[in-house]
Image (cartoon, rainbow, N blue to C red; front, side, top):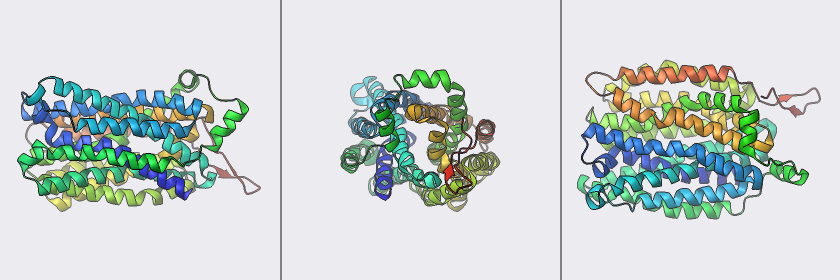
Length: 428
């Protein structure tokens, strides 16, 4: 389990590095480079629009790779998704700017972002299912939290590279070529990830399904026919996690640097410190999910998110690094109370024969609902004078919707039977 957890963490870290480095670039440089005819606000909105394309393609990736995972195994998904995302990310760093090739530049950017999202849509399902289906029942949330630590590691790596380049290069150098370096580095990271995953064993639950001839012939059709309500509820439930995370890590970066005049280095440092704390807390909160239940943790995280959004905007508006850090940290801790157990919760909601498709589609639809539009909506809502309370209202509303969805989902934590063995809790 330790070797499997390490490989899953490393793989998701690399894939999310690819995804996050684009978000940071969108907040800092892509607007003027690829949409120079727009005003600064419109250029940022357009750059965040290309950022959203990656979320739109993620559910398509979950369908494609979910079919592979349910028909041919979880392990092939990990290799194919990592390869696709890595190639797309390196290619983004090679796209000429608008000044060089005109409208072909943003078109290429959008196409490559689409491929990035397609690969990431398959990554989460494969990595999480290998961890969940190998793990002991009473420790599923803990072991499946290691792939969930991949996103903060990927974020820190992506923004650490951006921060170092931003500090070492002049603004002109960074905008000319420096921002491309993190995208080129994705090629080496993808190669390392492929080597790590080459020795992983297939999931025992999938092997059992294959031996019994019980694999689904059409996983997506089966999910839509028998589990459509569950897919919609899980997508709505997870929306707040994406909304909060990308408001904090993407929109707040643009807001602080463009509206408040906070330096790019200071704001990146505040966000990275908060993400690091979040990553450290993840396994400890996941262990609580094994003890007290997945649903309870998710309800608590949603409630905390709803209560913290207005304080978040107030603290960001001060422009003081320490207070901004505390605002970001509170939001991310509320987020991870929920997302630390999601990797165990979603697979447990679906039967094994369609688990890769069902869990991944629900997870990535939540990304569309919560992550794709949040930077765009938040940037538009923060236009004008005064604190952007509209952003707080929007995020609070999303948190309340997710709270309602989680309230309609069952608990899945295995409970102790009379003989001392673990048995499954209530499932959909």
